[in-house]
Image 1: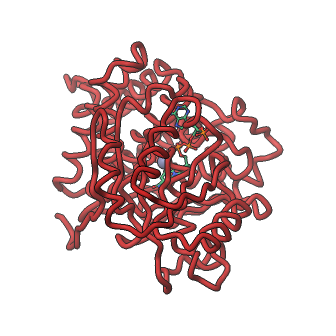
Image 2: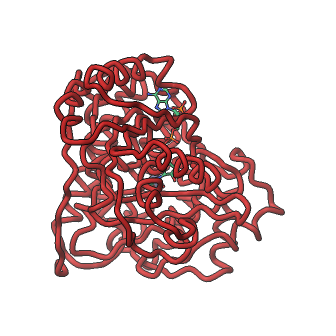
Length: 388
Ligand code: NZQ
Ligand code: ZN
């Protein structure tokens, strides 16, 4: 049964080829000072930077740049962004990039007018903002995280070996996001498939929890089927607009809070993956791919009926006269085969993890309470070992 909930998603989306033109009208709603945030330079190579800056100039904005946001943005970089946003009195933070850039922009937005240490306040104590929030908007160039339409912000503290996400409320969601699927055509294959698995896993994290009958899970099954179909096309033909636009749209719905409404969610794969990220700085989607099969096979007996349903409704496994266990196992085998077909990293060794690092990974893993099995330390250790 669906639990009670309140649902509101305030982010306005502009989707499709040429969607960046909508910046012109949107910028009219904000003051003159824009903090333009971007990553390591891909937007300069593919021309997105020029398009965005020419619109900002045409709209008469004062632009301060904050470049060099790294994948898995750090506390040190966050401090730099806060200082820059304060110095330019930013009226709007415009994030042009992937999840890292957009997450970082949100972390800056809640910290500019805050006197406390943002790491301690938001990522250790999980407090809500108590100060004015600078509005954020996003021009998305990498598909996967859903950051373009959610309140998620994931920051890495290398000194503490922790990578932690805070899911902020709707006041921190981007005010608007520009989603042009052609902007993703220049992504390297590794990033494209990593993003695809990130999307898939976001849906799994919300699906593999609870035993009730609710519409959110049916929506999730539809999203997963669309993603599997389009990912196979994009894997062979990355410039297939139909496939890339479907993937972009699925990513947004996979993590804009909708499919979590009224139900429990898991998120343990992300906790395992974030521990790996904190120790290796590996690409987010690949950290999830590397631990997923060991985790899902481990929890399968505790959520047998849902894994059976996943096999039949998502992967088309035929029931015939097989046992529930057999059907469920065939579903996971189909998922594993699809992951290999995409070329995902299927083990931790390839991400730089060695056996002697496992105790550190175990310490960095947060334990969630609402999956099919609340993991103890021995189980976490065993999953990491099996994933090597
Ligand atoms: O930095 P540049 O030069 O731009 O290169 C980036 C980066 O190296 C490159 N890239 C992006 N768009 C491109 C492109 N290269 C060529 N053409 C383009 N159009 O791709 C690389 C990865 O970018 P990044 O932003 O790091 O990837 P992603 O979108 O996967 O974001 C990952 C971060 O988001 C967090 C992750 O933990 C990680 O820190 N997450 C955020 C979530 C949220 N907000 O809800 C949820 C997710 O589960 C995730 O945890
Ligand atoms: Zn993710």
